[in-house]
Image 1 (tube, helix red, strand yellow):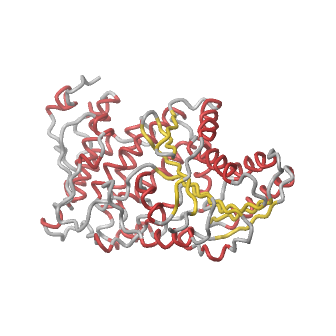
Image 2 (cartoon, one colour):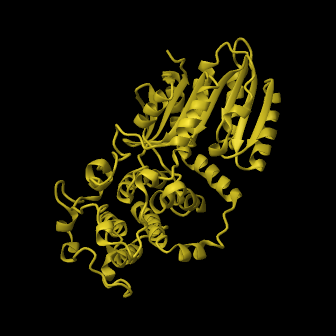
Image 3 (cartoon, helix red, strand yellow):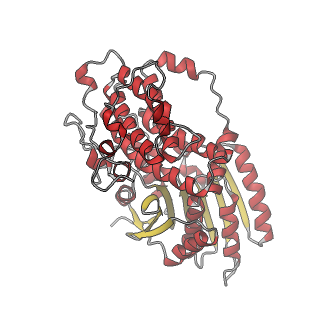
Length: 474
């Protein structure tokens, strides 16, 4: 254990090794590196990752290549938490470097096969292995039940309709209402028709079982292409909207205000030097707990405040028009679950630091919940977390879809769009707590924040849940 206030570098044999001193192509010249204790190795990997990211951001490809090789000697998708994280961040940094040569990048990825069935499968694995989505469903359903008290016709729009469990639970609750269940219509949105066909069959069967007057309306579409006006809200219907980890996809923009310059070998030194994060000697815990907004100071040549600033909102025309159209439907309730992370920074170093904080906690909670061997865990880490990390770090412009924002920014966006906050009830929080206790999910916590809820691993907030309603203009 490193004593408090003492850096790792001055308390181990690594103090004799200059950072980034390895020679490329020679393998590992220091075999004792593999014998490092987990904590020491983790510290060293953090230093290597941040240093390598600096080189990638600066366009120093030769030094970045050396860094990637060093990290590869210590990282492992089968290792401890830090080794696993390092493996996926290493891959993401390599992809960003590769994008400097579009022809090479496209050639290497031209035969890649992406199966929709695999993506759906890994989403279900995440649902099963971690409690986050389950908690979102429980809290969302309780908010819907409370908002729809006394309503005879209820219409729910589900922006990611792939898991029947959420709505089956709602059927049971509606069936127990003293006044009887409402007539329920669910509009389910998903890219895959097969998923919606399965949802229609399961929900229709369950509705009949619980004696719920029910209609399912499938919409095969991405959220970004959804025409809200085409959903045909019927007169007399009370509308509720459920969005679980979907709304941030509308933050995608072409970044015209901060035009991305590819880190190619031909870039001038002036162009390549302004996004570098100064290195300092901190322990692993300090690196992962340090808020990136404090660790990084954007260059003064940026035209507007960084999206990491609590008071600034990154331009998002698609989001603005979508929220305007959604408000026009006069929803009685909207429940939004989103990642509690600012992964929408305009520079790669901002995103690397914030993503390290966020995904370290996600990998850590998986480490405590699931043993290292199961293939299911590896699939979630590689096909879900790994792909998100790659998108956050390696992609720019319209390709960068994982633009997560913290609750404070969602509150600002929704209020500016004309929505009023609906405080989530203590009863919903109790139900969520009961779910954690019943399933022995140790280490997870639910906290109230300004009428909203945040789901934490230990003390680190990972997901936020907020509820909103149509608010007439004055």
